[in-house]
Amino acid sequence: GIENIMKSFLLVFVALVVASDALTSSFVPRSQSLSSVPTSTSSLSMKVFDWKRRQADESAINDLDNFEFTEYNLRPAPGSKHRRKRKGRGIAAGQGATCGFGMRGQK
Image (cartoon, rainbow, N blue to C red; front, top):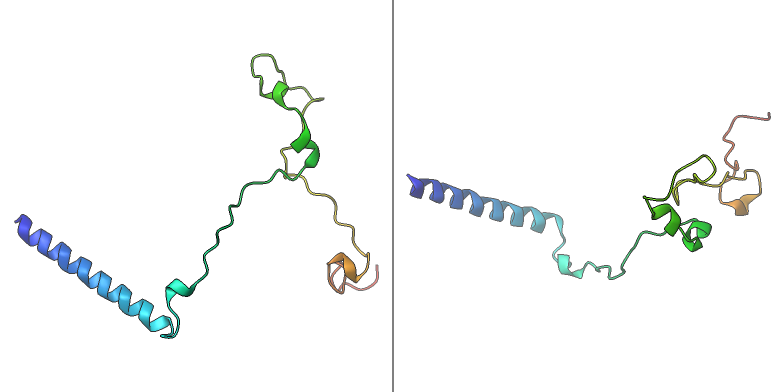
């Protein structure tokens, strides 16, 4: 009946707990414990990368009753457009030895 189901559930649960304890203790050195892992306390938040959009007053766009989208007031979402990468500006540009052009020879 229901007692047999509860006993089998309890037995499976205990077996899983013992198995997980055995796995974690076999992969973690005894000198370390999981509590020694530093926890991050920083609060990350989404940034709006386009500073012009960040400072702009967009209350007119959010007014759905009186605002109509046209081709003149459309603009991309903040963070969706990236600047073109300027290649071939030396090693300080952060693109490596080939400056982002690969190993393709002279063009």
